[in-house]
Image (cartoon, rainbow over all chains, first blue to last red; front, side):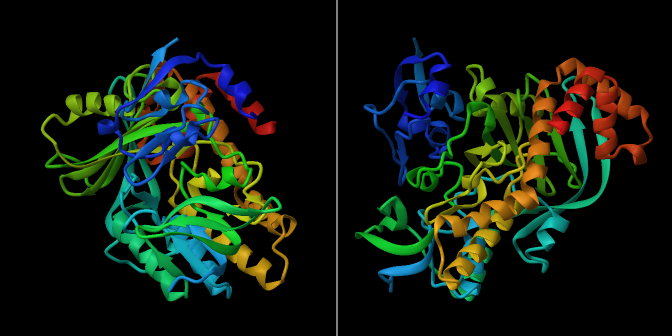
Length: 72
Length: 391
């Protein structure tokens, strides 16, 4: 995967939680996802956990703490 | 009714997409614009301020989409010192809902077909070339053919990625933002105000853009790599508690703004990117309306020209990247370097600079002098910036 190198420079997370009620569907998570595993459509967010590499970018980018990473 | 194929399909109905659709249609291309939401202009993920002179290049006539005009800029240092800057420029604070609707209408008048609640979930690819989009309407799903697809699908753009272009942002190049429209507050209706500092907005700033008397967009942008456990919403709540405890929240919105260098390529095989999707925003200020409109305009006219000439190969479309680069490339790179320099300024440097600047007579407090003064007292930074300009 062409984005792996950059993603691995950062501390990985152990798990990723999505809190739907907090989400504003703004797309920050999609914008920073290095493996394009997040899809956003009609007030729903889909994360393909098989593709997700737990890089921890999206919890940092999320403006409303709707994505929460558990520290590795 | 929707046709099986168009010359140009534009994905996304913001300022970039509407301008792209308009200029493609004006260039003689059959054009379809697909917007995923139910209405152009909603939700408003924008601080809505734009320079008047720049806007006049695209829409000179006044209209209800201009909510308010401002003439001054105030910078607030971490210690609370205020530097009032007088500019010759006048700024518009827009009503983006009406503004986007107007741009969409102008695209329609030019002959573009527009459909809302049309979610593009993939591209049709043939031999590595984009030949259309996969789109979901509320009642059906279908493929629609296109010679050129223009991705104006925002900061979360996927059109570029599906076509094999790298459009995701490094954390440090995404400003994670949260904004409220506050009513019932005391606000100087003539000034936009920007607050800086590690505590209010690391790697970004808080903005207060008045939309009239007693009403303003108040928001914060923080560099996504410096959020440090607190979300943009958390930063804004802290700011509001301190400065506007009695304000009423009339609207709230989260969003992301690209603060990046120009992408190497904003064209691909059968695809062009415009607006936030193509990182077309000023990395220092986060302003992106004008560059999005300029990019959309250029993308639409380029697509129409290539199709008219019978060659819309990746090579032919590359003139879009070239022309963008010629006009905006070096400007965006300079702003990017300035952004990096400004983000390195410590609270102490900012406070000192404010004191020095306030000793200057008001008529000398121009943007240029601000940078000059801030930097002159920190020669190392000046050297860094000078070097970066020569790189």
